[in-house]
Amino acid sequence: MISLPFIAVVVLIAFGLATVLFRKNMIKIVMGVSVIGSGVNLLLVSLGYRESAIAPIFTSAETTLMVLPTPQALTLTSIVISMAVTALMLALAVQIYRHYGSLSTEKRRLKE
Image (cartoon, rainbow, N blue to C red; front, side, top):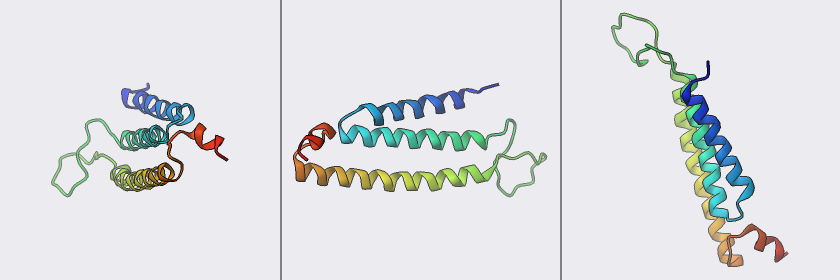
């Protein structure tokens, strides 16, 4: 059975991919890449979920069923990498705007 988080992952990644492919403004393309990253983060957290599980901390729990900690650690790493990539793409967009005077990919292609 497919659960709601996996449907949300597909919607987020599809929306981000459509934005990257069909928008001509570089800022919107950066936003699309960021939405794709958020979808991947949601996928990682969803993969580690276990129903009726407890947090993976040292405790005297009655049950040994715990949420998987590895996807959570990967998600934290992914968030940091996504922020660095977004900052780099925005810095490149600023430099392109300063050099060409526009953030449109079509106008950029016409100037070559």
